[in-house]
Image 1: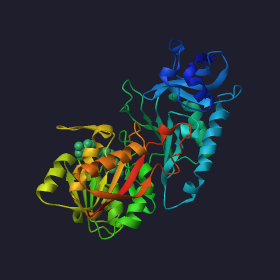
Image 2: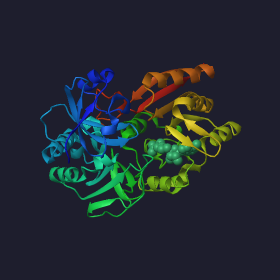
Image 3: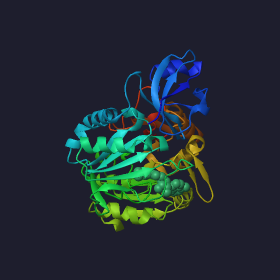
Image 4: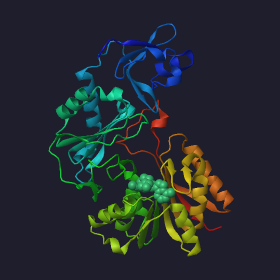
Length: 399
Ligand code: SAH
């Protein structure tokens, strides 16, 4: 690590950064040209050269780096990284103790004090996601900190910082004893087959854990369930285990079929008793209307942005229409579970999409549950955008 560089924060942003805002946003810096090598440590100062915070330079889609400490004399060295990892692991102690849940997040970026770094735990195997070259330059400290703190069976990594901010396809294995894949992990007693070495996504999105449990324990029994954008069918598996009469999983990707069959199978459910459809959801809506299909529960979990052959879906623009299509095939008194991981709008705005969809459908509704990130996805109170997940359970009321 070289010399620390002084980075000037524009007046408009200085007080926010002084109070703990962790992101070094591009527009907040007046001497961007002084940022040269990713991984450099930077001293953030205001226009009168007063110290605000210390951080690192690392380019990712969100900004130019992250604050690491607000104390001027704190060194960014091995003890710094070890301290952060130790605190993060201690915070997840209840998860480490729970034999029924062996997959969870151990380190959640700025929520745990180091933006751009994510570490997930899968039954003793760890996956580190690096969101910039800058954070990747601290790799040795971070891996040592992890190994010194927990028992590590193996480590995999996802580099998410090529020129387009996308995942870089390469061998993800870093060290340790490689497990056989699929690796079976548990979540509230349910099995997941995961692949730590197979691209950007391992097979499960851990942030929906509380939602899946709620569906299984309180909503699925005796219901017909449609799971849209189903990926590996995680919601369908929980619904089936909760006593759903039948689940239908719809996803455009060919891989979703074998993956969903696998998730049912590892939980002792015969996949033939369920319906797994590889299709564009927008086509499925039309199909369902034509066949007069209706469901007691519809789960919507689209990506923030997706391109298919005929449509481009953007959560910020198209969620209302997605809900209108859904309302049309939901039974009266049925439940719609609307989810989004889009960080460009908040819960209030999301609810305005729900309101608009029912108004335009001449329907009535009631919000009966809502969720954001689970406790292991620790967020920073100064960085609200980090709390991206919004899930609303909506009852369609007979009008
Ligand atoms: N609900 C899933 C995660 C969804 S990830 C879970 O709980 O695990 C988003 C999924 O949407 C991807 O699997 C992608 O293939 C699918 N997808 C994107 N656009 C689609 C479309 N138009 N129709 C159907 N599936 C789509």
